[in-house]
Length: 458
Ligand code: URP
Ligand code: ZN
Ligand code: ZN
Image (cartoon, rainbow, N blue to C red; front, side, top):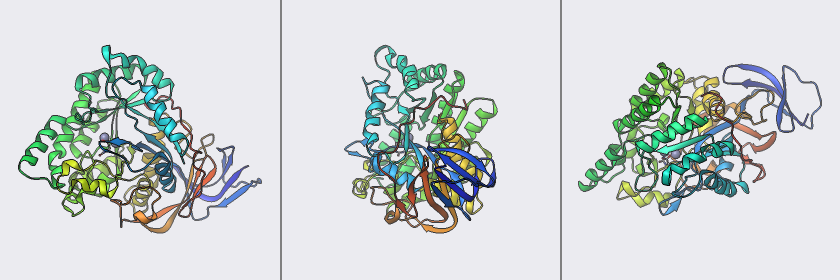
């Protein structure tokens, strides 16, 4: 064997058991109660939990936004990821007018290649179908290239990202035919734009009006509309960064009628409420959808426990403090997005460690289900034949999040000062140690592109 991890407690999405794990050529080769064979390296995991590497299916690395680019490069973002126990990230290249899907993703893949510290896959945000809807003809080639999920923005018209309902419906139908999962960023664009204009005209420009412009009902309507269109054509649908109770209820209702609808939420919606926008540094929490009220926050936790929410991802899209400061006088000038790539898995495991959810549930929503839902067949699970993406987690370690102990390139975090019970101690990527007791110890560029299969679940 290349590596044996001994004496640990293995946690999967459905089981907890004591076992030794043998790794050969980057794969989990054997799981047994006791392994007596020789290995090049033996790690004693007594007192530790042995977990699958996390799978974060929603990041925006090096994302061009207006006059800037999100603060983490592919290198920095994936370095931070492994330091938070994450071994696979999914990024969101944006297809622009006149450009193909494969070309769009291939360009981002080339950017990621040299510095990637964990494995990576891509969705693609579709913005323009082109003359005669020509882009629809490329969907099969995209799936063959490993892009088996798309995202449609129901917002951001001024930035040229939004698709209208007619286009969304065409995408849903064609994607369904090919076995591609369509994801949506659901907010009602017209309503939020008109509310922004109204508040701005009244001089109400503090970050609180970011929330007031796009409160619960603005998100809920768009989620219901997306569900309506997907149900009408029997297409699978995935709601990204779900943040409101009413939307969650709509997803639950559609699911109970047998529709293949899936939902993702993010830690910022589980930890904070809209009151953060009243803080002095409220601008740092500006992301879309906005962070909602306490009822939604509680409902999202309940949705996780009940299995209505399938995945917890980050929507990692950090900006530097100076860029967030563009909006000190005017919330509309704050670049949207927050950091989380290094915090999500420890945060959810901390929630398990303090009894809010089970450890298996944390593993399910942070690793197993995202891998299965998005066709990463080698990832997300401690089982024989899978990639040896393994996290050793110390349930006793006390950890306080600070930008000083993160491994990204950004200079502040909304998670500053949050205390966690338990923390990852080591991360292995395909059997190689890449994070060890607070330090990145891998070799940049070892992260590989994942040619995804079709979803195992839809
Ligand atoms: O505020 C956010 N979420 N920024 C990233 C882009 C998006 O909408 O997912
Ligand atoms: Zn979004
Ligand atoms: Zn996003």
